[in-house]
Length: 430
Image (cartoon, rainbow, N blue to C red):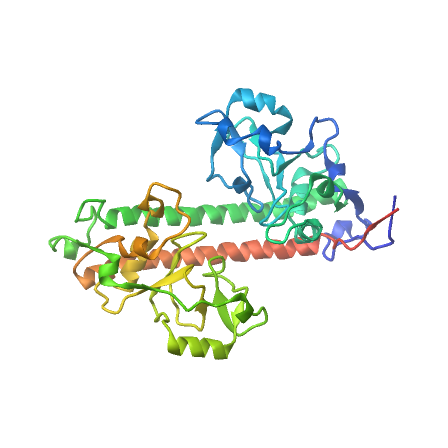
């Protein structure tokens, strides 16, 4: 097997390696440790690990949801028995090893297994990679797998229209471009230092969010109570808070339905769906259609609260007044003309709702009656509402600033990776 005559060097290279020549081209499977059994293997077939195999404690199962984009997501925890884990020994995975996802989003993402347990069992859509650390720097391979160049290659190789999937054989044969071990180490050290900064900023952000959560527990009454534990001095002798259903103080409205044929990808007025609310839109409607619908149908006013009712349910934000259109029934807003409860105060109340407690089943959608029947507890004094909203707003501003700082670091790392790794243009030839 030979290679096309392509220049396999990155655009940005450390001075000591500028004359080191081309990077070598290998397959992903070539970096696996040949001396470790099952060093490149997928998870068990679905029939080999069923929901009936789950137990309350034992060996943790790494689920698809745990495989984040270059980070391990620790929110989802299920376990199987020691006996079942032993039976699935070929699908066990251990701390410090790399796990990749065969399914989106995005497909081919990878993270490192944490050291909180001595071993784990992979889900069916996980892939274990044990790097041969005698020849390759593990962290370099890890960041290379998560680079834009390699991710694009995985995306183009994967199949499926709604959710991409890549097979084990396809993945193992994808090409990697590898420099010498010293250059691998230099790149790993550079990107590793950025990762340390990103981790530190992430901890600051988590601490701010936890602080806000703890403060809100003090500033709002416990369920069944009418006075919070912590009250600003000027309101300590004020009356008890009152409770009303959200439907008694406001109305729940939505935009007129927009069909896919009425949207475009080029530009116009942003059309926000549940996955893009609060971020970058991936669809638009024409200015003329926006003006027509805005003049004839319901439309939020500045400051009114938008809330997602499907997907990631209960995500709230205040409408900023910019031209935008919102996906009907999936994104609704709280029409609040009387302002008995201010929008600023209400935003904090709704952001703190435990939506899963609305009923005993798993919540996949919020319906109008759910929102209208939601009990809202609030102080009668508009000044006390404002005092609480202003206090929490200051924390929100700090959280937003820290989030932007974290995003800048992540984008800087992504841009640097694009410079430090060659593009994957060369192809294998037989």
